Length: 259
Image (cartoon, rainbow, N blue to C red; front, side, top):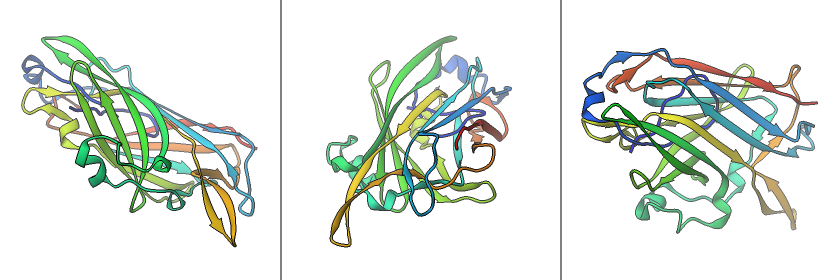
C-alpha cells in the first residue's frame, strides 16, 4: 500500500491505500498542499546537560487537502535541548521485521512508541480511507522503524525507516524518512495512497548497568530550554509520478513551551 504525503508538519513521521484507474488519469495534476505539524514535549520543565530529564515527544502530521500529493521523503528536525538515547535500547532490525512482516521477533524493549495514521485513496472518484496503527521500533544504525498495520480495505503490514542524524542551527537532530515504493503506489499503475494523518508518541525507558549499578535511561530526554521554547520543523518532498503533485514543502510547528 501507500501511505504518504504531508505538507506542513513535523514528525513523524505514515500509512496507505489506493487510487483507481480513473484517478490515475489525472496523474501529474498540480495541487496546493495544506499541511499541519504539531509537536509536544512533556514535561515542559527542562533538564540540564548534567541532569537530563526523561520526556515524551508526540508528533502529529495532518492535511485537509482534498486531492493530496503522495509523500516521498520527510525530514523532521528536533530542537536543540532534546536528545535521544537510542543506543542504550535493545534493537530490532529491518530484516527481522521483514522476515515475518510483523514485530513478533522484536525484543520487547525495542518498542519505544505507538500511534495511529490514516491514508486516503480514491476509488472511482470516491474517497476510501484506511486507518492504521503505528508502532515505533528502535533499530540498529541510529534508525527507527515506524511499523504500520491496517486491515481494511487492504491488509497492510510494513515498516517505514527513519535515520536519526545530527542537525544544525536551532536543531540538534533530524529524522530522515524515505517512504518505501510499496507504500506509495500500492497497486502499480492504478493505486496510490496519500497519508493524510500521522501521529506517534514516543515514551520509553530501559535499564542499563553503569558503574556496577542499574540505571534507568529514557529514550527521549531534555537538557536545556531554548529562549522561546523548543522549535520543530519538517521538510517534505512528493512523488512526481503520483496522480497529484506538489513541490517541496516545509512545515513548522508552534514551539513547544518549556522552562
